[in-house]
Length: 185
Image 1: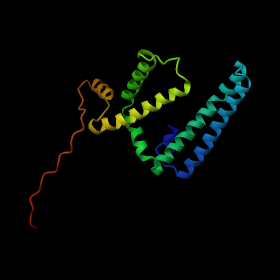
Image 2 (image 1 turned 60 degrees about the vertical axis):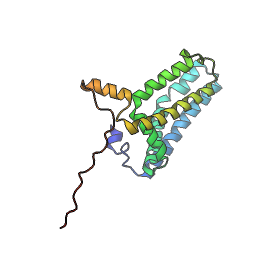
Image 3 (image 1 turned 180 degrees about the vertical axis):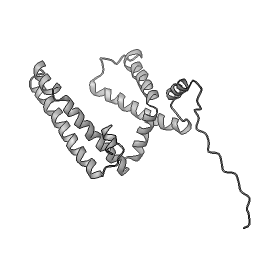
Image 4 (image 1 turned 120 degrees about the vertical axis):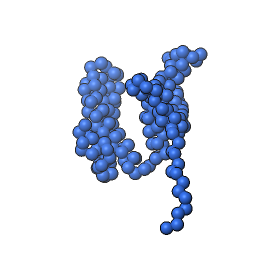
């Protein structure tokens, strides 16, 4: 709430301020996390060393890293860089419940239920291929869907259940203004 009230989240701060927050936040977050990971690895992931170096400073790295990421994202939004990509990510967010369920069912099918049974057999780096493929699909599907419909399918169901009335789903075509006869003034 404080980040909203002071203008950080609505994007009312200067790009210079966001740049400083991003540099400091990401610098501190990466340093805390990186040093902790290196010390835990150097200690052969001994339970106590890992607890001291990874768990104790976890919230510091997480909070300042989140602020740095948010500042970086707000810089991208304010400058219009990657506008086409951010519009697709926004459409995924607008259909968050539908995309969450679709992704869950798809990945469960690929890794557990389907004929592949990839769970436990796929190299870790290959999981990122599945993530990338699902993100590309979600961005394309959501963008196309929202051209024709107000909400995602599950958002529509949720909204209809909330109001106890079937909600309109299709985007209504704008009604044209009535034609005015040429009048001589």
